[in-house]
Image (cartoon, rainbow, N blue to C red; front, side):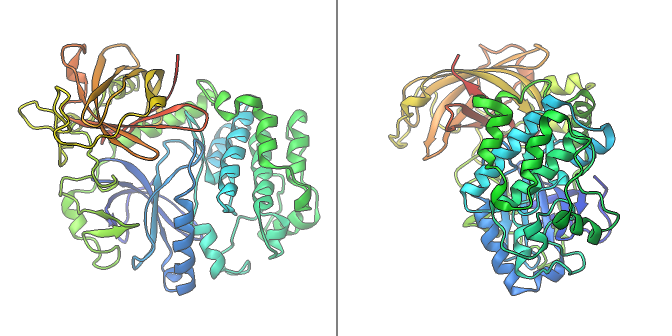
Length: 515
């Protein structure tokens, strides 16, 4: 992460740009913040790609497809503007080092970490392939290590460059030497098997501390990939067979990724291997430093947004994928779907516990109510999302689905760090009814916050609640969120309940299960 330089943009779309994150052959990546305070990674393509009509068309298609990719082990695409003068895409930011840096700094990962990493990446890639996509650039720097598990990143741009780039073009290689498959190097048709090969090379690097092909130049590396066997001496014996199978020269000989995930994690899948202690302590310390660093960053002042280069990143109000993103200072969240509100104040009890554990880093600006957003509860203490007596005020009659009703328990995270326990109870009710409570404690047990949940919207995949802290039931309420905020729940295919409370001080997230 580096400071911005004179030529860097101060705003891209609806995001304030805070720092540089990196640069590759396809574009430059920045750390950005939405109006609601969400931290994102914004990738901007290099200008010479932006002038190519074929690239633009392909980029738009790839971004639209990448939006469909979801799951526990990917960083989701949140926003994009393929039609901007310089196209860009924003994804969720993961506060963790990439695999390349982690291994370079601390050496090969321990066996239990490698198995969890392999299972998570295999599941992520299998989900990508089920959507008809091929990543094409799986490599250590595109794998992030977070406390809650690995994350596969960089969808969209790598595939889009297929429309214009040739393997020999300077700075435009589709893939990375040493992690490209033989068919990719030879310019032949690629498919899911291409990602399996790259996955095997990544696994070899994680387990052995060095890549399986180590040529002295890019041409030498590419020759090795096509004609020579990988060097797997550093890979532990019990993993060597799996890695070798993935690195087969013949695409048809490589294993299916679902089989790989099952071999590494069994019936429990990657989720059964990812938990406290899945990362070695030195990497955990790296994650913690990064999370604290996010809190210390100085954001670009609002007046800098107005001075962004005219036309380069669109007008103050842009339309992205059919959603209007308002300019900064409008009081509404730039990355929320229509009808959603952000929290007025930003530090929940669990977030405070994390900050105290990390040395008491707590910016005063996070507690001054500056995160006020349109639609928040009024100063008279009334609930902005519905009357507290259960009157729906003329709202819809959608009922809470039966599969959500009952008790749920789990652990929360904030900025990728452990937050504390959460107990959720939901009852039958309709839009406008108060249907449940969410009780959370901070990681140090200093406070307990009891949130009352009013059913707001029943969507196809998500259930949205207006939430407000119960002052009488909570302890140390000065550490709880003040005013109105939103809680979003969704059930995954495994029956786990995904909990999200979008907070400008860091999204509060958790996976809940029935006790």
